[in-house]
Amino acid sequence: MPARLFRSAKADRNRFIALYVSMAIGLLVAAGLFVYEARIIVADGLRDEEAFAVLGAANRVLHDLENAETGQRGYLLTGDETYLVPYRQGVRDLDDTVLRLQQVASSDERSIELVRRLEHAKTDKVTELARTIELARSGNRAAAIALVQTNEGKQYMDALREDLGLLLNDWRERRSVATQDAHQRLVFGSAALVAIAVLVCCLMVYTVYIQRRAFARVHAYSNALDQQAAQDILTELPNRRRLLATIDALSGKAADSQRIALLYLDIDGFKNVNDAMGHSAGDVLLRRLAESLRTATRHNDMLARVGGDEFVLLATDCGDDSRLRELAERLISSVRAVGEKEYRGRFAIGVSIGIATFPDRVQTIAGLLDVADAAMYVAKRGGRSTYSFGASPGPGLSNVVKLTR
Image 1: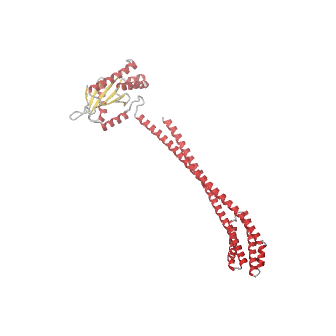
Image 2: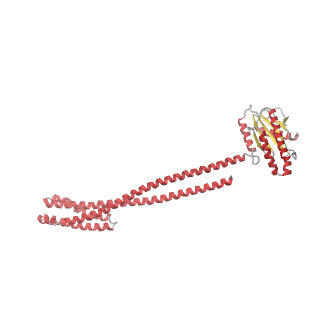
Image 3: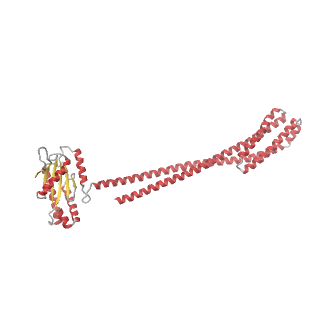
């Protein structure tokens, strides 16, 4: 049992170590993956912000140019100076807007080239707008309108819108890819987190199962040790420890009306068997005697082996002395029968019995064992294979054990 329990405990320990290492490695890997995914999601967010800034700046460039062109045409058609307000505002904002576009799109070579072309187209368009306004303000409105009708400005705007369209489409695509990638990684991360949580829960449940199984084995082994500690290994009868525990339990709950008897048995002739045939033969004899004595007693009575060739019978609700005498004679007869059967008269096997009863002869249950032991020695000195009753001294009595037959 101890070797098997040790192997089982070692196997459980190895399982615990494997489980804890697996959980630790799994959590570390999961943490690494989450950090990696988080960095990519942050990068996607930065790309989205960058794309948003580029799109905003590009749209602002187009908006400023359209404001300038609207103001120019309104002034050419009406001659009203108020139309020059949006023109001047648009031209004034264009430099800052283009500079902003250059800054936010500087991370991409293709975007840098497009912004350079936009800047050239913007310069040409602003120059064309300024020329027409100067002609109109100098009184040569017809020449200004003729210049507009050459579609020179339209060509600049078409080229500018084409390049802006390429830039906008490129960065819209980038923004869409970044947003979609971040969304997919969030979904994947959430699913991975759920899977890891389920896996960790399963591992914890399995760990609890292994722990409970290990504790159950330890508990079973502890119970087995307790049972072995209270049982005689040779005869499988209760031992002295178990007997004393039972006596203590009876002392705590026994009522005066319950008569309890304790019979102390010492096997006569057992030493002769040991000396002549060896301890193995003596052990065989003790097992045969235990079986025979157990058969001769009631089921509720406790028969224990308390020494080498000494037995004790604890009988609760034992009845009167006549029943105890019948029991003692039955025990003596069963021991003699075992001796006759085993050795055919070669050895005189018998038993000397001391009897003590509570509460009539012994005042306390705890005192039964000592009184019965003393009575057994009196019986042995009186001729062996017999029995004697013993009583503890009471008020007015001497300290000598009183025996009756």
